[in-house]
Amino acid sequence: MSLKLYFLRHGETASSQTGTYCGRVDIDLTEAGYQMAEQFAQAYHDLHWAAIFASPLRRTMATAQPLSDRIGLKIQRREGLKEIAYGKWEGKTPAEVNMEFHDDYVRWLADPGWNAPTGGEKGIDIARRSSEVLEEIEQTFDSGNILVVSHKSTIRIILGSLLGIDIGRYRDRIGMPVASVSIVEMSEHGPLIHVMGDRAHLDKDLRDRFGT
Amino acid sequence: MGLKLYFLRHGQTAYSATGGYCGTPENDPGLTPQGIEMAEAFAEVYCHLPWQAIYTSPLQRAIQTAKPLSDRLSMPMELRHGLKEVAYGEWEGMHPNAIYKKFPDSYVRWLTDPAWNAPPKGERGIDIARRCSQVLEEIEDQFPSGNVLLVSHKATIRIMLCDLMGIDIGRYRDRFMLPVAALSVVELCDRGPFFHVIGDRAHLSPYLRSLPNT
Image (cartoon, rainbow over all chains, first blue to last red; front, side, top):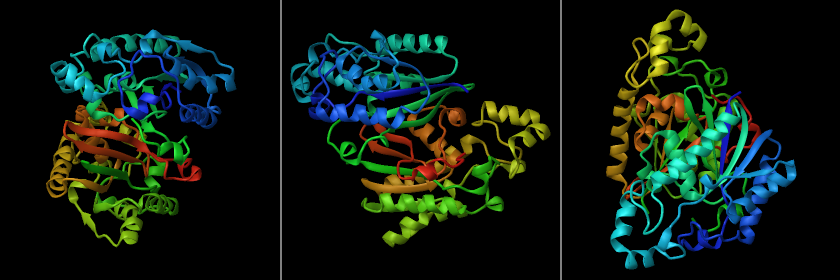
C-alpha cells in the first residue's frame, strides 16, 4: 500500500460566507463550520490514520480537532500549511481591494503565481513552503493515510503542484469549498487523484449553504 | 453563469469489474445489473437540474448509462464518435499480465507515455484528445451557458480533464483514478475551465460505491 494524502479544507467561517479576504486573520469557525468538522470525523474515523497535520490557525485546528479527539492522535502543526498572507488586503472585500489597490489586484487576478497581494505572499512562495511539509511527510511515512488540514489557496496550490499545473492557474482551475476533501495517492508513477473537492461526508443542508 | 460540463463515466461492466482492456465497438459489453443501478442512481439525484443536452459515446455501456436520465427528461441523446473509448487494437479484451507477456516493449512504452504511444493497431492519447476536443468545441459553440451531460469512458474523460486543466496528455493514466459512474464537473468560466469536483460518487449508495470499480 502506498501513501495517501487527505487534504481537508477547514469548515465554514464568517469570511467564507461573505467572501472577504482572510489569510492570516485568525478567525474561528461558525456553528455550521464546527458541524462540518464533526461530520468529517464521523465519516472518516474508521480509516486507519497514520498522522494528522494542520495549519496552526484556529479554523484549521478546530477542523482537525474532532478526528484527533476520537482516535487519540495528536495534531502536528506546520507553518508551511498556513493560508496565503493577504497583506494589506486582509479583511477587505474584493470590491474594496479593487478600488484601493487596483493595479496590484488586476495583476494578482491574472497571475497569482508570481504576483502577491499588496504586502502579501506570491503563490510560488506558498508552493515552496507547503512542499517542504509534503517532503517531510513523504520522508516520515512510506505508506498509510495522512490527514492534512489546510486552507483554500494553500490546498489548491499544493494540488496544482502535484498535478503539474502552472501555480498561477490555481484560482481559476480548482474549486475548493469549505470542508471538502481531496484524496491523492502518492503512487509509483506520481500523484494519483482519487477524488477532488468531495463533500459526500456532509449533510445536504451543510453542503447547500452559500459560501466560498 | 458559464457553461457547466458534467463528465459521467459509464457504470459497471464485466470488464471494469475485472480490469480487462475494453475499448471499441467490436468489444462492447453492456452494463452489469449493478451498472444499470448506478445509471439509475445518477438520474435519480440529477434529474432536477435544468439540463440543456445529453451527449454520449455511441458505445452500448455509455448509452445505457445515459438512458435513465434521457427517459426521465424525454431528452434525446446526442451520439458522438468523438466520445468513444480508446481503441486498444490488438489488446482488446486482454488483461494487463497477458499483454505484458505478449507485447512487452510496446506495453512498457504505452504505460510510460500513452499520449504518443498507441497499443498495436490502437489509438494514441493525442488522437483521442483531438477527436473529443471537437465535441467540446461543438458544445461550446451551441450552448453559452447551462448544464450539459457528457457520458463517456475512463481514458477519454481523463484525457479531456487533462486537456482542460493543462496537464500533459501522457499523464492521464497516472494522475486521475476515475472509477465507474464517477462524475466530474467543469465550468467554462471567463478565465478558463474551473473544476468543481473530480471523481464524485456521492450519488451512489454505499453498496454501489463499495463494488470493484476500475
